[in-house]
Length: 407
Image: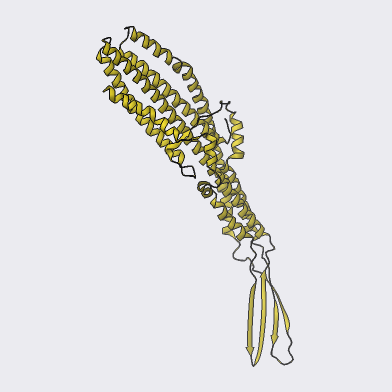
């Protein structure tokens, strides 16, 4: 049994060093740099902008001239007419249509920027999850090493007749439990590596990824009003809705100007086979009269879209305010919880282990009390790592919701 425990523990301890020899060590900044503007993920997010730009070109185009040839023959007399007609967009609706299309291009760009911000935030969350998974695995590896040392000491004492075999067997049993937990921690670390690797363009074996936790010291959380003010200027979804509103207003102007007729000029020549007839010119000015179609549907659609954009913007602002307030409170509370736990429970773990070890060596405590002290110490370190990970997750989400770089 002891050989099994020792082999499993040594394998768990040696694995990180083997992987580290071929590892790709990244800081959070390095990971974000790999999400470059040329990556397929980013280009896919911004591909809608080119589609929206095509609508601008369509709105700016001039109508094509129309060529007409007319031939009439009556009583042996033939008349031929060649005419060219050109519609003249002089009412200004073409410019307003282009302005509306440009506003939609800006809205599409802001939504792409927001999607990219979300992708960067998700990458940072994946990086933080990998840091947390690595920390858990390291803490459990250290706990397994402490049990291994204890097993070795107990085996020597048993051989010398100083302790009973129960103590060694119970320590080996604790080692098996830790080995099982360590295997689960290694699986979580591998999953976190795979989640982070999917954000990168270049092909990287996820097992090679190592997250370097180089987080700077935490700064104070800004006031709520400052965060909300920042969100108004940074969040792409809010800015996109404002551009949607601008586009709807321009579309309403297009509908209003469409009620004003745009003239169409026709020029050409006319010739006749009648004896003594000469070639003459043709000039016609025509326009459609908005008698039946006064663009009521277009006006209604533009008005509805303006109202829709305004209502959505108001609803999103309320949602952003609630999210930022909740996330700010979560960051402050989680920071306080992690700090209190560090100063309280985590600070006493080393002393608890030392006292338990001395008491066991003096015969005042049994093996169960000693193992409980080891277990409590390991649990405290894992809890601290979980609390720090929760703080980091809340900070990243607050930074995304408000657009404010806290760290």
